[in-house]
Length: 304
View 1 (tube, rainbow, N blue to C red):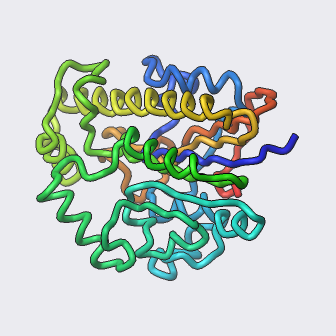
View 2 (cartoon, rainbow, N blue to C red; view 1 turned 120 degrees about the horizontal axis):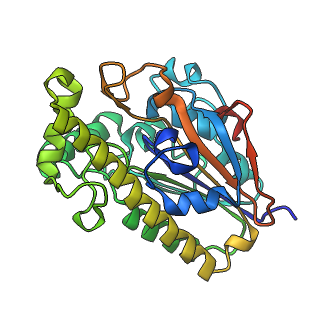
């Protein structure tokens, strides 16, 4: 049976080696770990870049990042959403990353495209809105949480009668690392949004200033962000199951890139190609199975 629907769930800044099914000693993602036993699980999936600007466009189009970099990171190639829309699919995307917003043309091909930017059709205004959110209005919490993203996408899904393509891009694992206090698991230290943002900025601008205790805290909080997102993904799957969507939907779960924690003298994800930044998880779940672990090298360019 060919699945009727397609759901793409991409996670910003999730490195593969912080997941237990990739050998991590911590159980950061019990739900994803269970899915890995039922999916085509790729152990050597490589992102085309360490940054969303290049990686997500490649995921959505199957083209190398230079096709977009030459055009100021604007959409220059047809997305998988446009191709599926032409084939009769309803298409929708939900996220809160300005670099793949309407300001750069990424809403093209999507009938519904929620990038959480009130002024998202203008590049300068969109980036200005995000900067104001980031440093003034919502310091430390300027991305849409997974719980809210799930609500928005499920509301859209409930209105669909035809086959659909749904893309959710989750920002929770991306810095600043400030998981909800109710979801702390690997640390008891809860940072305010402002404290989390300030610690992240210092790790980027002055990594040598990060103490050993702060270094460990950054990793603990990152892992707790993964744990929180994993719980929200499980809740999303439960909602899909209650709507009988899982039985005829192909689901792809991956990440656009990873994050570094001072392994090479830097934090987060500048434009380097170290393994922690480009080795990402990739699960493909077919409603009829089977499951298989695939060790051969693959690239996210192949997803389309």
